[in-house]
Length: 73
Image (cartoon, rainbow, N blue to C red):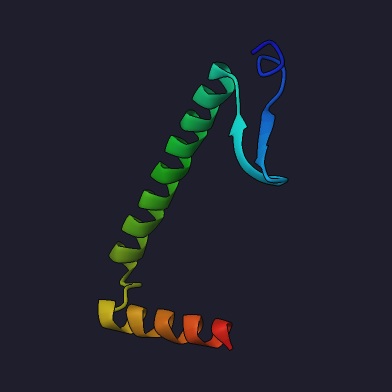
């Protein structure tokens, strides 16, 4: 517990990283940053809608499927 108050601590299982323990203060900072980022992204989306930069859902999913298929090859 003392170590986590000063820096994050990684937890491994079978030699592979599975978790990170951080202090409560660092966790709160992370949540604040995440909320700010989400607000910025939502605002970008609203601006795109207002500017007419939109695509139909079917087109988006078709492009995503193509991208996934190409990545698997």
